[in-house]
Image (cartoon, rainbow, N blue to C red; front, side, top):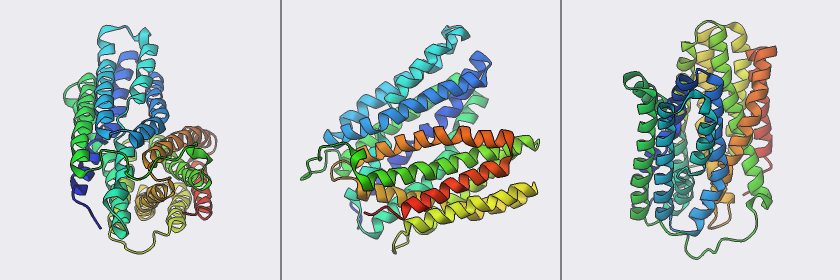
Length: 382
C-alpha cells in the first residue's frame, strides 16, 4: 500500500542526494588545481567523507526526536555555506594553506543534510508490504543513476566554467535539494517523529540483530568500492584510462536494470541469495581480468552487476525492519558510518593487491568480502 506524498518525497529524496555524487569530482579538480597535488585533493576529499561518517548517526538521531524540517533547513544552509567557502579558499590563499581546507571539509561533512536517513526512515511510514520492498528496490536502482549523473554534471561544469564554479554549483544543488525535500516531507505528513513510539534508550550498536545487519552492509559496500578501484587501475595499466569510465557505466547500468526488475517483485527478498549472486558476479571477474579483454570484462560486469541494486535494496529494507521503532533514521546514519569505515579499510588492502599481485587478486579479495557478507546475512534475523 502507498500513501499520498510518497512519489513527491521520493523524487526530492533523489534530488537532495545529487550533490553527494557531484561534489567529490568538483572538489578534486579544485584542490588539485590549487595545490598541484592529487594526494592533497584526496586528503581533502577524505576529510569530507570522515565528516559524513561521523555526522550520519548524529543527524539521524536528531531527526528521530525533532521535526525534520528545522533540521534540514539548519544543515542545508550550513553545508551550502561550507562548500561555498571551500570553493572560495583557493582564490584568496596560497596553496600552502591547504590544511585549512581539510579542517573546513571535516566541518562541512558534519553539516551534511540528513536527506538519506530521513527518507529511508520515512518509507515504512508511507508504504507497506510488497510496495515497501519495491520502494527500496527502486531507490537502490535510482541511486546508481545518481552516481552516473552527478559526476557528469560536475565534470561538465568544470569544463565549461571552472572548478570553483562547479564547486559552488554543488553547494546550490545541496541547498535546493534539501529545502525541496523539506517541503515534500511536510506535505507527506512525516515531518514529526513517529507517533506512539517513544525511542527506546540504549546504544543501537548493542542491538545484536541490527549490528549484524550493519556489518553485512559494511562488507557488501566494501567489496563493491574495491572493484571500482580495480576498474580504474586495470584500465590505466592497460594504457586505456578512459575505459574505466565506460566499464563503470556498464556496471552501473546493469545495477540500475536489476533494481528496476525487482521493484515489482512481490515475493520474499531472499537477502542472502541476492548477496551471494553479487559475490559470484565479482568472482567471475577474476578470470575475466586475466584474459585482458575489455569486452569480456564488460559482459561479466553487466551480468553480475544486475544483482547489486537488489542486494542493496534488501539490505536497506532489513535495516528498516531491524531498527527499533522511532529510531530508523539513526540506524541508517549508523549504516552510512559502517559503510564509510569498511571502505576506508578495504580500499588500501585492495590497493596493495593491485600494486603487488594484480587486478585479479584485488578482485578475488573483493569477492571473498562479498561471500563473507552473504554468510553473515544468513545469521541475521528480523
